[in-house]
Each structure stands twice: as C-alpha cells, then as structure tokens.
Image 1: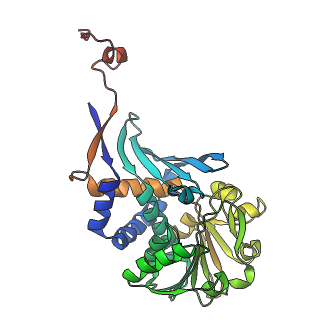
Image 2 (image 1 turned 180 degrees about the horizontal axis):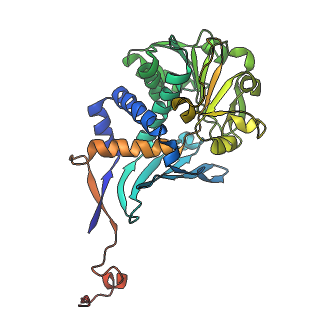
Length: 346
C-alpha cells in the first residue's frame, strides 16, 4: 500500500508553535531566495482560476525535473460574514518519475507564512535598508504574518494601521502588541501611511479600488501590494505605478491579476528573480518608489511545501493517507473490486 505522508491543520499548528512563527518566516524567506535562483529550472504557468459571483477557486501548478507540485486555494471576500474564512488551501507534491503523490499538507496557515516570507524577500532586496516604519492597510488574516515578515527582513518594530473594519483593527492591535510591536491606530489610510518607509496593502474586496492615491506615497517608499490578486481587483492609483520601479513574481500571471492589469501590455516590469540573480537592478536610488506587485505564485507554494516536508518527515506530526490504489498486478486494477482472489500470471 502506497501511504502518502500528510500534515494536517493540528499538526501544522503544532510544528509552527514548536519552531516559532517569525523563525519559520525567516527561514522560509531564505529558502525562497535559494529556489528563486533556480527559476529557469521550473516549468511555469499562470494559475487556473474558476470565478463565481462569490469568489474564486484556483489551482496553482508548477514542476521541476524531479517534483511536481500544486496548491488548491479559494478566495471568497464575503466568507467572514457567513462564518467562513476568506482563504483556505491545501497542497500536494508528487514524483515526476512515476506521478505518485509524495506529500500532502494543509496550506491555509502555510500560505500565510509563505506570503509573508515572499513579501520579506522582496523587501530585503527593494526597500531602503534603514526602513523602520511599516503601514498596514488592511488588518485581516494576513496582517500579523506580514508584520513579522517585515521585522525579520528589516527589523521593523513600528506599525501604523488602518482598516474599515474596526473589529479587525482591534484584533490586530491585541496580537501585535503581544508580539512586541509599537502600534499606531490611524484615523484613515492617509494618516496610516504618513511617515511610513514600507506600505503593505492587503484588502479583501474584489473590486478595482484606490486604496492609495499617488499623493499619499512619499519618495523612497517601498510598496508591498498583495491585495490585488485577481482580475478586477486592484488597490493602487495607476499614477503610482507610472513613477515607480515595479517588480513582480511571474509577469504573465501578474498582468492578468495584479496591479499592472491597469496598465498596457507593454508596461515595463521586472521579475524579482532577475534582481536576485544580478540580471536586473532593484532599488536604484534612495528616493525611488518601489512596488512589489505580488499576486502569489506557484513556486512559492512549491518551496513552502518542500520546506515543511523536510522539517516534519520522520516525526510523529505526520500521518498517512491511503490515497493510491495499488493492485498486486499493476495492469489488473479490477482485482481490487472483483471480490475473488486473483492470481498473478507466472
């Protein structure tokens, strides 16, 4: 029987608590940087999305010569009002040699960790090294992870926050102060970004919104735009993009889903891996505005799955799924349901 290692929600939670959220994000940031440098080894495609009036369900596949991976993920902005989470996910790794699954894991928590680590990686290369203040526009499920990622990458301790949901801000303040952050609850988005070195936008509404106008973004700011992640959903004034250096994960996907869906098809962007590899510049001046137009890409999930797999295999956190049917004779699948013993040929 081919038993497939599985890491469920309780086990993932236990592993994160054992390691520490900030430690996991920091180590995952390093793992992402290493694997982004293998960019050309991967068979890449934009995610496959099925949209409905309520939200979207997506499949995010990728592979290298030895391993295939995918994530199944949803995004339903109205879910919290109905008692459900906005985003849930699970992921699978498989052997390219025989196609068998080799690892399955929950990815609701893991996606939050890898998203924070990806943001941290971009900030490591694009934000000013002396950045000390982070503004968070949107304080939902991702916000605490994003704050920890920026602290791990840049040493940021001061947070300025704004959300139209007062309860979400109160939740965030409680969590962030326990984590040792100095939190300023702003009176609006304009107040939140005042004096910020890094701005993360992470709103949930599936709409072409203008969360930040051009005049709100000071010279030298790094923008971590992670909320605009599907067609018809944006957060930034297009004028910001025109004056900024814009960096993306995988351009063919970001042009469909990211902030740059507002721009012409020939609008110049730089894929982040090229900066890491020394093939393109990142920030070029102290006063340059940089934008990481992050929509989430399958390589990040691939790395996160491989990272956690290597950490937990051989521990009692892993259970096993009876997932692959294996008849004694590979050509006699019917034997499993025939109800009588089947003798393999000599």
